[in-house]
Length: 346
Image 1 (cartoon, one colour):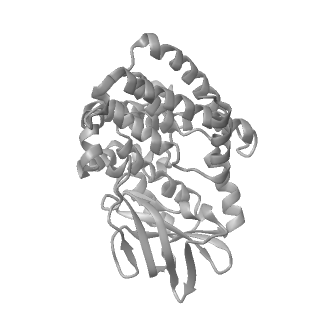
Image 2: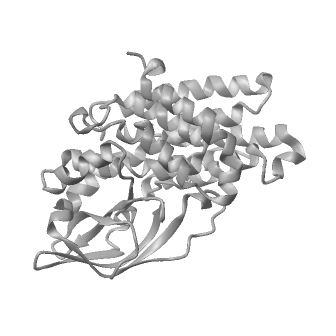
């Protein structure tokens, strides 16, 4: 079955065209509604990469990327909330701990939506969240700087560093409770609609049976690092959506470049050894950003003064592109991107 005719790709397009894109400017100003989340849950897209035995689709990586492009291009805020879900699913797929059997099915079937609170691990040796053992469980202390989907997610995958320098991940109900307090939603230049907060952890107790992963921090970091080197499918989704607003005579050359960068980036993403070709991966990631910036700028120019109105699709896409420039950023990817920008005059 080709990507184009895969049922989940068709479902993503139906959602994008029938629900997400028509409401995207309103959602950008008012917030992702529960109706969008319920539609995503019913669609099967939350289990796109999950095992069939647990209710998922076990779709190939090309389908996972295509659905991400479609959703991000239609409503980046809704895409961003639901994309958090796929890391908890994959964490459970590889887990051998009891929580796998309790949660993998409900997450794969879309009965529950999960968020993630682990990006702060990438700031090591600074440790924003510490975990200590206690009889029958763990206690979390510290601050999660960014958590997306508050008020929309059912559970969250929370990570911290233990006294033994292990990265530890555990599932927690996504609600205020003793030891867990959320800030007010952040006002951001883009994706305020995704309901991002910070989380204060003051001795949050988590039972041992909620732990999904324990591994030496160095091992986790080595496995995580390659993930941030590849181009993000959402970048291609935003770029395509922006070019749709530009007269074809001007958009066509950018589409040609986009297709080439996308082809090369995805070929590397499918490479069997993720730690190889680091320089090329980072260069293609930066080139994808360059094309996204050009496409969203072209959409604004094509729209003229009207493009600066808050109900304009062009300005929304331009702000969403600004967000994607730093989403999932690491010191390594930042350096590669800044190097690429320094090469470009003007």
